Each structure stands twice: as structure tokens, then as C-alpha cells.
Length: 191
Image (cartoon, rainbow, N blue to C red; front, side):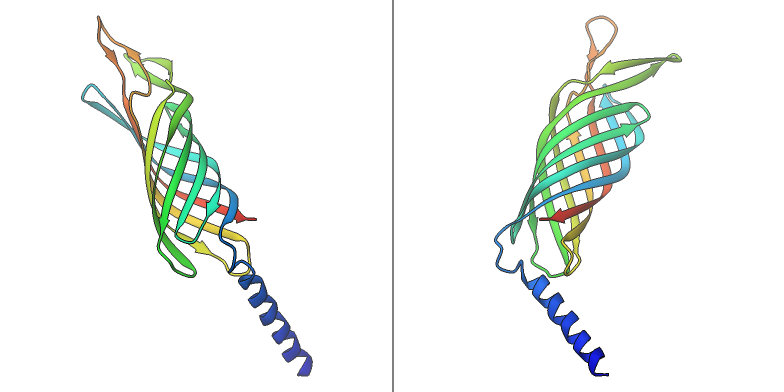
């Protein structure tokens, strides 16, 4: 009985010391990965095409008490689109202990991608332009005590104007805008 109570005291004190070790730290630096699923809509010449899409990526950033700043790389994949994006995000967090709600926004660019269009049974592939991208996010962070790992579950909408030039008949050219919307899960390792 005495050994069990000593073991319990040791475990509780160790967990208390580990969770309190970061209490005085001003900023937590992190790296992580993400995956998500949702949809994409391309807007061009009053014709919208919608498709399901997936996103995979990597993140690195700094977490301070009320804000979070991060760099993000994304790879988008759908049946007619492959694209890369690099963004810088800023988040505002509500103070909480285990579950922390947040909202955020980001700016960056879409680059190195291709978009395919089917017309009269013929599929044509076009290279995407390097163009600006903007996003908004809303979600919640789940922190696990005594483990330097946090999970984010968020909804995200990303907008990029004029992502590709598609030649049209005569002098007209289509330059569709892209809207990506996904639910993503991020895993962040704090170091």
C-alpha cells in the first residue's frame, strides 16, 4: 500500500512539473503537418465548376498567449487540379486551458500547378499562373497536458483570383478564380 501511494505521488508531481515547465515561456515554437478534405469551385465567365478536393501540407510557427503566427505549405489535389500554395497566417486565440477556439487569416500565393478542362470530350491541361491567395480559418486547438503535441480542427476557405489563362474564341480569354473550402486537421509538435 505504501509503495502504491508513493508511486502515485511521484506520477502526479512529475506531471505537474512537466505541465508547469512551459508556464513562464513567452512563445512556443512548433512544426507540424495537416490533411483535409472538402471542395473547390472555379468561377469563370458565369460558369461555375465544383469538385471535391483534398489538401496536404506542412506548417511551422510561433504560438504566443493570445496570437499565433505560422508559415504554411499546401498541396491541393482534385480530379482536374494539382497546385501548391505558400501562405503566412495570423490567428487570434481565446484564452482557455484545454480547448482553445481561434479565428485567423492568411495571405500568400498559389504556384506551380496545372488545371485540366474537358471540352467536347477532349481534355486540355493548362499551367497555372503564380498568383495571390487569401484565406480565412476558424477552429479549435486541443492541447494534451504533459505532451508537447497539439491538434487543430478547423474550417478553411481559400480564394485565389485569375489562377489560369484559358484561351477562348477570338480575343476572349477565360481567367477563372478558385475557391477552396475544407475541413482540416493539424498536428503540431511544440519544441
